[in-house]
Length: 75
Image (cartoon, rainbow, N blue to C red; front, side):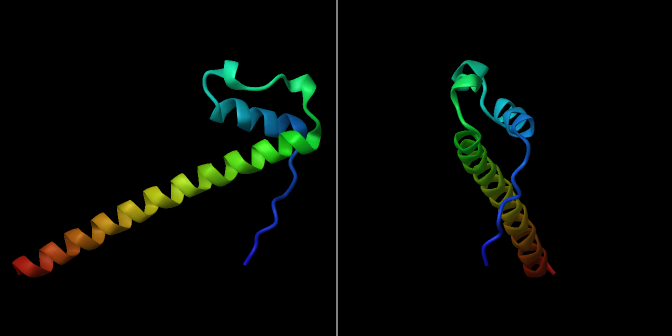
């Protein structure tokens, strides 16, 4: 199942990119990129951000399962 990304405004994308890339010296010159180029950067960073959130959630779930398993063994 593919979820199509909603195309945000250029300002919204730059705000997200600025928050994700630190220090801001790493951010390309805003005036030199087209909307499509900015969207490509935004999309990749958004995907990476979502992936890290999913990995963190998986780790939380794994820890909860392990704790439940340990509790069942001691009862």
